[in-house]
Image (tube, rainbow, N blue to C red; front, side):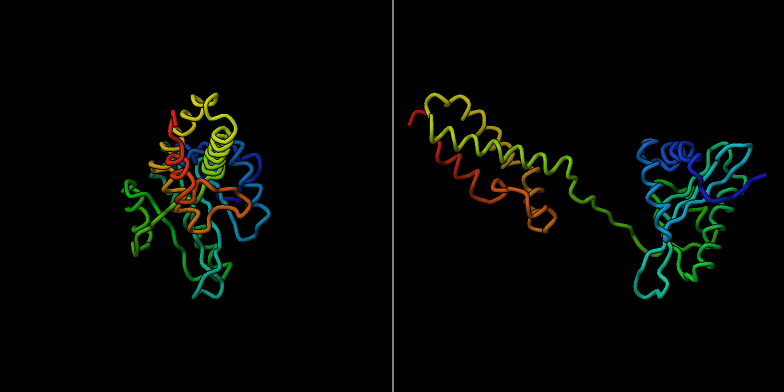
Length: 230
């Protein structure tokens, strides 16, 4: 017997394993628990699990999104997965049917989802449930503050140090200056600078961020100004 019910806190670890091993989303137990705790506070979000043989064998997650032209929004499914040994037993169908019941309850007239191009078995499943392929899904991950901002701050500090040494002790600090300018030149001529510059132009970086290295002149001027031995 398969029971479809709302997720509970004690299900989070099993759900994380399904996300990783079936849906192919790398998420830790801790991160997933934090996400689901936030979702539990937002009545637009829902997750149902399939329970069989006293364990969680599948899940489906979605959110009701406000959008034009839908007065009550539409449901976007964010993930559906069933453990391999429980597939082809109608469990995925039961979970998807539960989403459709959720849509009726919320008076929503559209359900949308995205699935990987390589998941051809999933394509057959959804089309068999009456879902139509109507568009392509494009994605871009926005600025990763743990990576992009740290990188910009690193080169900003390098430029500051290079400027200070060039003013205060150009001869004694010559080796250090060369090392700093070599790092800055590699950054300025590489793809990371281009991406950081584009993100800044698009308004994706916080206003409080010091970002002189993203001007088109600062690093270039430092490279042109410094001439070892002059």
